[in-house]
Length: 334
Image 1 (cartoon, rainbow, N blue to C red):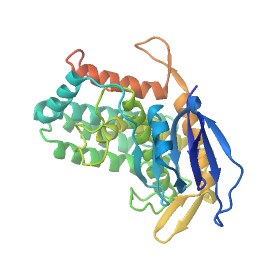
Image 2: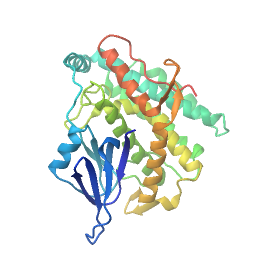
Image 3: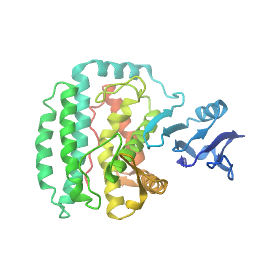
Image 4: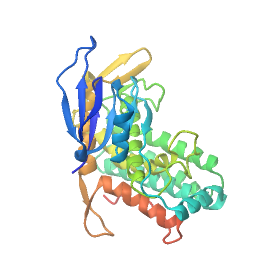
């Protein structure tokens, strides 16, 4: 079974016959013991340290459909090596473009992303309300904000409502995970442990959505909620809106409340708080476990992994674009 590999240390990655060879390098440029990754076991690579590589390696990765996601020193996602698309469908591509350019079709999809994302946030709050965390006030405010979503006519207006929902949602974090003080969302750079966790996990969720989009016929650069940019795969941002409450936020709540993540796993720099390597490894291990965990799918009647749920979401979006079935985003029921 293919899986993700994470390169935390600086080093050199190269092709060795039909295998990937990684040689770690320390700060004095001394080479460590080489490690080998069988290509058939690699789903994608996440690179957190500096990496030396050549075109032969990327040709090899591209032929095997392996994406590489890069992060800088401050754990910001900086970009991906995206292999040549192997699933292409001209008709779907045309329909995706038409749905973007038609204001009514676009806002309908954008509203669904926000509606479902907000619904999944409410599920989290109600879960903890039932565990004496007193999130009743935030629940009431968000329920009122949700009523405004379907009355929007422009994406900018919709994004404003989404921002208000998230602000209220994040204000409940101090009740759910009181270990770390959290005074609201700060992105660039994160200045406290919770902001550092949210930023890091949101980026991982984005790359997971991008990986699943690669295995569909959808164009990841044409989106409906987020404005398509020149260089980013904005459709992955759209899909991530649905899964961040389910995957990212629940993971953070669990890691903090179970004390798997503690103060010692963060480092403070000038106006920034970042995860140490030990913290990143704990988060990535929990993330991998979460993606492979399964639930009994109500409609399919069988167990599917969270990772597969993301791909199913992409398939549902494709059906909507092709006028086969109205898109309805994934809502949690537990």
